[in-house]
Length: 143
Image (cartoon, rainbow, N blue to C red):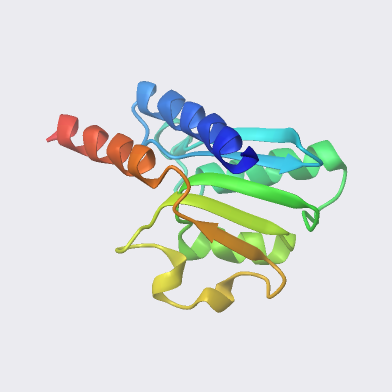
């Protein structure tokens, strides 16, 4: 299944983040079965609280497409987006969101699913155990 294949790519990005000392969240944006953008958290590296994997991926995919709208694209991300990222996905008019682990403390769905564009389709739980396990290991190793 393509969702699993592309989520594995997002998990590779999350591992890159972890290797760099960043919270292990990875993302890929796919359009027409082709990866347009790969990204991971860079908040520590860039000293920028907005440098989440999703934000980096949106910027890269928009540049690759030569336009700001991602209505024909799917974002695969290892962790449920936060409200900031959901807002950016709204403005990008993302076609589809697929995420692995839910974020019960900071995920967008805590506030309202309406943070996403009304036409954005959402699929949750793809490789959720692997995504959550990577995050748990990262934080366990830091304590």
